[in-house]
Image 1 (cartoon, helix red, strand yellow):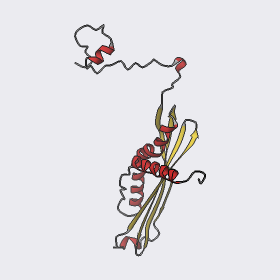
Image 2 (cartoon, helix red, strand yellow):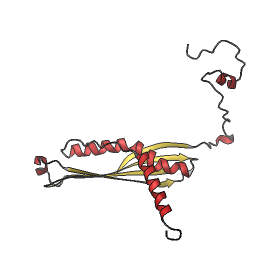
Image 3 (cartoon, helix red, strand yellow):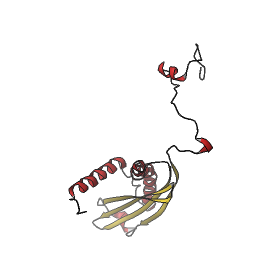
Image 4 (cartoon, helix red, strand yellow):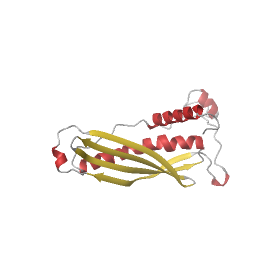
Length: 188
């Protein structure tokens, strides 16, 4: 029965219950800080929105008749800025260009943003969130905007492949560290 207490001596401490394999344990959490001050780290998505969307269909309607497979170029960039001490904006820019031998079929440029609330988060944790985890959270929504824009231009929806933002972040950190180590002191 859910919520039923196990039979036996209930006067035992929650530490003992944890030792017995029970899922209830004493995490030794101190109660709330006096005066209601919350000092624990917290991160949350406040809002997300399209900041800028540009779509071009320069060769329509002729481009609808082109039979050659187009080349798709997808570029993206991530930036973050502080709006207020505890609020940051992450901007995910995605530019998609479809070109064929006859010319450009379409261009979609999107700046998709999210407002992130961060409180009591150290810089060494805030930076990876702003440049890896935050973009990972925003990407599916930006991907849908791109797919809908391409469909509305008269082409089949473009479904962008998932991006490993955490892997890219780690790769860029390693490259920056290698560059810093390769630069002789005083030459930076």
